[in-house]
Image: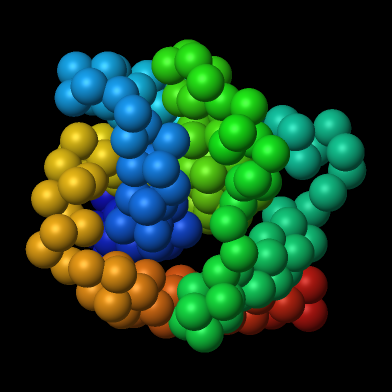
Length: 205
């Protein structure tokens, strides 16, 4: 097992999930709910998101083979996608991953949890790309298990973030939330650039 690879995988997945940045949207969708139902929404959201990411982590390689896409091409394409998202995070211009129309239409616990919170807010194109690349680059079977563990830990932290969302907003404020989002964007930028370089070097070889 490569501990460094586990740390890189976890950092990449956690940064793109950006639970702190998702807190304002979670609060806006559940503000009229009592605490018990808000926790239920958080629980269902992370279960759905984990299931989606796990499915792409396990079957992503077969999806690429089915469409005849090389892992190098996917690294370059996925790296560019992550880089664009990361740059928006760093510049503070990250657009919401969900539409206002979806916010208005989501009025049931299961609907809110599955869409728009679980997908596309958490399990969106960026996070799906991150888990697929992490699994494809895993040096061994043990490392693939630890990629799944990285997904699980990231999702669990996201759950805790949602449960304590109001306290987090009170402590950090909007300025603190923006600062953390930009820091995670900076880390994700470096990871995305490295992903593109690795894919390019693979093509050259």
